[in-house]
Length: 86
Image (cartoon, rainbow, N blue to C red; front, side, top):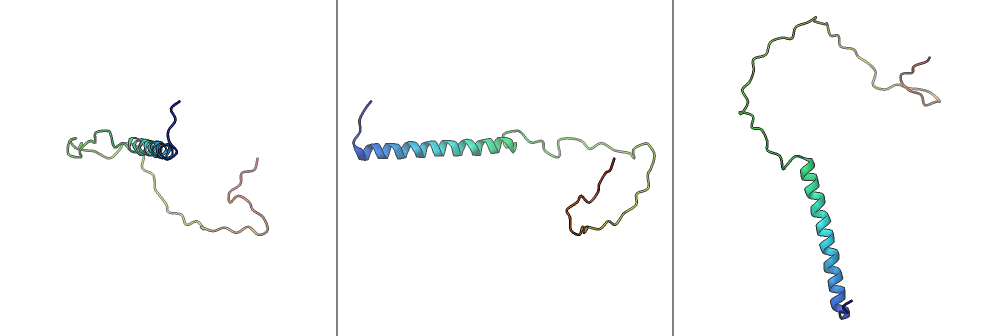
């Protein structure tokens, strides 16, 4: 094992730790970019022709809006808002 003077050894250790930190940071950034899809080619919006669509076949259902309370109170206990009993 090669022996370095004290100041050089400290400097080499600092450079090595900095290189490891920068390497791991670059790896994390590259991994995040890869997971976000930055290295995949994107499909331009004008490249695909739009198809004409018609209404789907089948039965039509009536939709009714319901108003439900956003806050429910339970005095003295913590219970589920909706329970199922068997």
